[in-house]
Amino acid sequence: MRRRKVKSAVLIGAVAATVAALGPAGPAAPEGRQGAPPTVVVDCSGEAQVRPGSYLIACGDGNNGLVSLHWTRWGATSAEARGSNVVNDCLPYCAAGHFHTFPVTVRLDTVRARPGQQGQGYFTVLHLHYTADRPSRTPRDAAYSIVAVKPGVAG
Image (cartoon, rainbow, N blue to C red):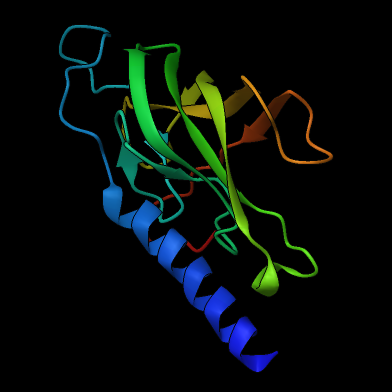
């Protein structure tokens, strides 16, 4: 049993590290106002991202994240992508659980001023639409709030 716990913990850490290491997909120019900073999505560490290739939803434990994101639109008021949601089933408990991958479409919207960043907006709502199977007890359409904290302030 101890060996299985260690193996699961290593797998969880590996998935979280992979999601964090993938970072932004690239510097593709976002749509928006001329000369204005692009609208961003803020990651778990409070860093601004534009068109990230991956995004961790469950900052506390790494048991829910997005990978292989391919952005079809990134604008001043919304962004859209296709990718996969990687979720730990936490059965019988999270350290012993297994990760499963589900195809999703992603939409970011509801822009607010980013704290401490003059003139920069950030998306505050992440919407997922499961295009095929989905995690148990999860609706086909789910929404998550994104909270940005000022740099140097614990969240």
